[in-house]
Length: 113
Image 1 (spheres, rainbow, N blue to C red):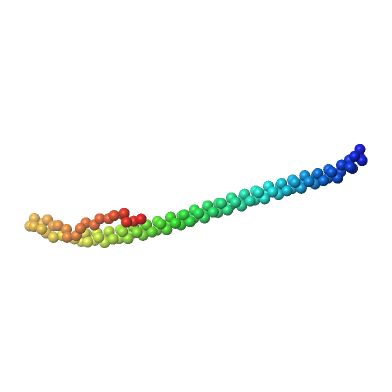
Image 2 (cartoon, rainbow, N blue to C red):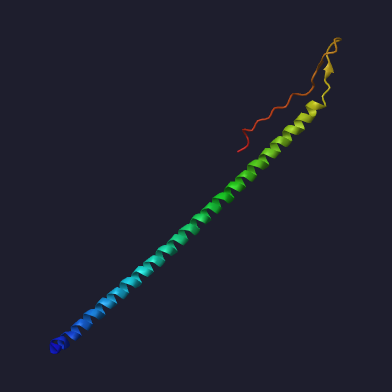
């Protein structure tokens, strides 16, 4: 029996080495795949974070532009209101009724984009 075992020893060691090499390659491949997936997930999260920051910066710039336009529009309206506020009008007849010399200002927000 010992003689039969010694004949199979090279075959068994070769098969064991092959299985061990295959197992090691499989484990290394699995670990590398997991690391690649983690890297891709981190890159996707970073890309999404960057896209959100770009979108938020763009929104802030648009809001700043709109608020600036609104301030200028309100300033023009305020200047027009000064003339109407200081207008005492002219008396038309003896009854003391006065009519305004300046028009009542109006404001439109349609020009603000």
